Image (cartoon, rainbow, N blue to C red; front, side):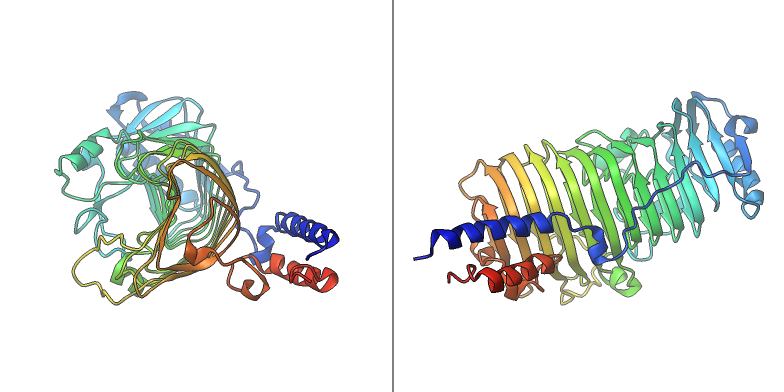
Amino acid sequence: MVSSVCIFSQLVDVLLVLAFFSHITWAVSGSSPCKQTDVGVIRPHSVTITEFGTVGDGVTLNTKAFQNAIFYLNSFADKGGAKLFVPAGRWLTGSFNLISHLTLWLDKDAVILGSKTSDDWPLVDPVPSYGRGRELPGARHQSLIYGRNLTDVIITGDNGTIDGQGSVWWNWFRSKTLNYTRPHLVELMNSTGVVISNLTFLNSPFWNIHPVYCSRVTVQNVTIMAPLDSPNTDGVDPDSSDDVCIEDCYISTGDDLISIKSGWDEYGISFARPSTNIVIRRIIGHNRNGSGIAIGSEMSGGVSEIYAEDIFLFNSSTAIKIKTARGRGGYVRNIYISNVTLPGVDTAIIFNGSFSQHPDEFYDPNALPVIERITFKDVTGDSIKVAGLLNGIEGDSFRHVCLLNITLSVTTESPWNCSNVQGYSDLVSPKTCEPLKESINPKYYSDCYLLPVICRVQVIKTKVLGCFRGK
């Protein structure tokens, strides 16, 4: 019989371990991309968009004025940079391109409106790691605000608004009358040192903010909204990008609030640029058709070192989802998600290994993704329908899935459904599925991402007190 002293010692050890682990910072895995940003950086040259003949009545098209203003400011890019100020008004425009060392600043009562005429959104080549438009083969419409091969770009303001007026695009999508893939609100390609902050984004035709092949990206203090039934209006989609920080945002859209991607099937495998070192924190959100945080399904270039904490998702369809399929290749590894609160969420965690839309018939069905070292810690939720639907790929199990301190109030009789997954768990309620029931203990510390510290503490306590082995 184990003595009461030993039982008490075990309890103290568990509490010490959890307390110790709860204070682990991102420094465990390296430097965080979330750093203090100065959106008020002084640009020695500044103009107001009205100097170029704009009319802020919400009716007059101002595309040429925006393009001319940017062209003029380009001459100052190597002289300390420039600032384009957008004052109060409703400024209708088609697509325009940004330049390096630029601040685009919107006044609190400024609204940039996307044109409802598709010709005002020119066509551009597909993203190379996709091989085609995401919705239709061939070219795609350029985003409202676009840039490529840029350095030091700030899009900010005093909570001004960028409104894509996307309802016309959603109707074309639903009626299947689109000729090309819909445009985003903001897309920056091959760019470094990007800050998007203190703005409201509304009614994007497609994804809202899409950094692709970018480094050092900060999305901070933004509100992103679209109707809950709007198709594919993702909030922020880092795509084959690294050192990304997304923090202090409110997002309510018709699809994924944040979706991490890295290319599609053979095109993503060939391009081979992963998404890595991405921090997501202090996000509040809501959706009915997508996920709070998604990885994939386009993840063929690889996704790793993803850290999400302090996530609050309410009255939503799915909280966390990893989406992939045969033919994707690539990998999703070293994912750490903690301190997640889920009131009224249908399904807390989903792994979907059969998300099988492909760009064309040339993908390799034998290109199997590697999904491993996924940790969920400190997750709570009320009125949850299903705790987890964790389904990997037959012959390609998702492995080293670790669940720690998860408490969900589930309304269905079958809270977990698992297949082709392997992992460990501790302090999970309701009890998890059989493939994940083995307890996290010292011999598995290297399997669970960011759990080595807790397991090493356990080893120390075992040696000191001798209670974890029932002695």
